[in-house]
Image (cartoon, rainbow, N blue to C red):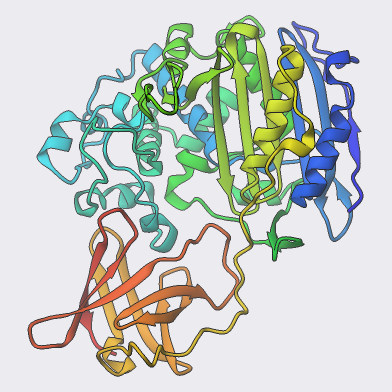
Length: 500
């Protein structure tokens, strides 16, 4: 696949940011192009800032492969969880306005909000949500498979969603936690999360191309399609992923030009055009360690201190003794990342229209960091090439395992099943097998052994739909009465409420 790049200049009133030749970055274009070729990447935009200057701003490849439409600095990409630092910034802005304290319990601002236990209701604070230490953890199957009509409806599931850990026990990444933060922002401002992001962040930063919904993005004349890789080599176009009620955790779409402005503001202590956008003290706390991802000592691995922590919407750790804050984002067809070295006033933002391209981003960031700071360099060929395979939907479903047959005829598994934290799904017999009907997806169930099946796509769906075990359980009479799905560490139980 041939590669094209577009370079351009950005003029920022108040400070002059101009791209110029930097010898440290010589041959970076070719390294990126070679890595893209190895990863089968369709399109990529990247910007590097140092001090007050954008020292590198390039776009490569296509936003639309079929029509050979090039990526440029104003091409919009979904940025996934790189949205979280924006939502965290909103909370800091509200705190600076006196509308909340991060020590508040969420119920102070959302009177309908209740967690799964009295302990959580009494202990969880806004700060815990910011730092992913509330214990909620990953409960994404609720909004992926069973979306609701409003954020409030989504959050009213919480009493029925089993937490993944105890409050402040450990780092437990949670999109639901950031959905709560978005709702708190709405409650204290009487505006939607989207309106707040636009009014309080996008507009002051002149991020004129950025928005918060797929509908807004696809109405424009310059946005990227998403792609993935099938069979280790074939580039395939994939569906967009709607964030539904978890918009505050991952729904922003942006451009490399707009993200450069966001990054420069962050590196200047929250200031843009002499205006304080995010309170400096809050930004400093955001970049600080509030939750440890991994322990920092091992006789065998010899970790350094500050090994993988989380602040308010930011991962923070050291890289070769340098303090680094960063966040990545992955949604169907897209990978985004932002990496900053605040003490060096260096930032790197990368947007790609490829699923699961984290290692590509890591390699590019590593190459750039080593060059800018005169660290030991590696060749682009030294980096591991790996990415997620595209989810295929046209493969046949294997027949019933005859050596470990189900305990009942397939009709005995059919029916509707309910879990109050998620919703209702239906199991039907079709085409000599079983299918599961979710509110948004219909999927096949491939038999593994006994009463255990696994979901398998039979129609095109977005790429962030993993496989789960569906374990049907009998009651004392030998009738199928429950369904266990490993949506979480503790499997989620659906009770059979009717037969077909």
